Image (cartoon, rainbow, N blue to C red):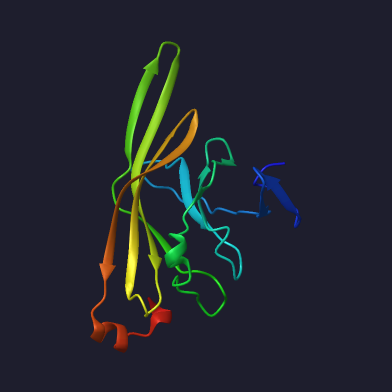
Length: 168
């Protein structure tokens, strides 16, 4: 059974349980380039155990191996939880999509790469956003992600006091 199961049951993969999900994508044309992958965040209600960044491989119609995105155990209790019971993550593309055509004898491979930034919001007690930058690569063999950088965005005491955290 794959990650793409449409049933409402659960699947087991590498000793971890994932809720089966059903994804629907709207096709939008981009005159500049056809994107062959879509990164997204998977998490479960009121738990930090299953936070994963996944890449949907449009070319093959499957989800690549998920990578955990949980903060260190020390910081897990400070991850902001919204009113619906989910941790607050955001993902944003931070580069253009680079496309390379590679001729391997009789096979033409198309490799696409782009950088994405994953942001984790912590509670006002810590007052920061943790950012991880990933290089996502997709070709005929599938999709892969590699972390290439990290940074912290620290908030001033005034901002921590004045901001409504549910809107960050």
